Image (cartoon, rainbow, N blue to C red; front, top):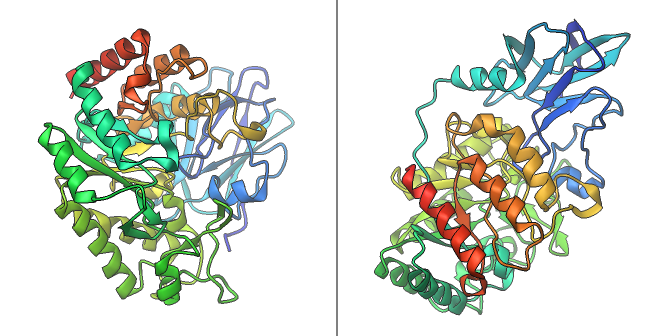
Length: 439
């Protein structure tokens, strides 16, 4: 249970021009700046509150809330003020702001420190610079199977696009196989019926001078997986002793792997050692929020300590030279663990998100939060704005491509390459080439 909120500051504001930056909990949580009369984006159902926001931190109406970071531009010429958790990696307080009688009343449920600067983004950048992290490694250029094939991807789809990269002369470093190669979430080394040989695909990719990448959701376990059936003791539990739910997806609740259980940790380590040995050296790890959910773990470790140890285990297994991209990850607790990080919700072939919820797939929410987190790029990691989609069927593809290009972050194509028209081919080649030139 989190601590009660205590006062932090009272700041005189100009209600007409003041702005507040909320930092969301994880990759998919809305983040950005709002006018004081705006209604910040909030979850529109309980399941999304678990899967895409910070569980257990419901925000009252009329209140702004940042998870570990909140910045205020008073709008009257006074300096911008930023509040951040005193120990941002393992203690991430919720910081609230409520406007009363011309003042912003700030409170938090944990210790915070304060910074000032000339603007919201400079204040966020200064805070990040103060962490003194090593400069992140440049990202490779990527082709990803997800936004064309989703979970129905086949081995033949990968081979077709691998050949098309050569035909179209696209400067793609990594060919990343996304969700759909595995038999079930949690059974990462068992192939689905649409794939024949994971090592064989990696060999074919490398034979064409490219690197092999692969997707996993390492902390998720499907209830119908072999892992859940064989080793129920490897699952995080709720207070009643039942498997902890990581939210509902794909028609059922998903469970959480307890990486503090020695046998579960050994199994996870072996998964990534095996993938690395098969020739994969680019890893997208997704739905990472699950590893930071509060629950009962074998070791008794708190959730954020368990989360960081779990990611560190993956890094140890794949080696320091492999590239590690996080997604659906708690932002501040992930600092120092990743080469690149998804900094927005998923994009989509359409613009508006389902039910108007800005944690859900859509170009609008991806642009809003991606722009709101641009300050993280090159400081905390390489920002991943999500994939370029340039095929004709994609709504407002020109606007989406312009957003991806403007971020200067990880550049990934996610079309069936042979479906691209001339504009799509030219745009994909240009963005990939410009990304390669900056590495």
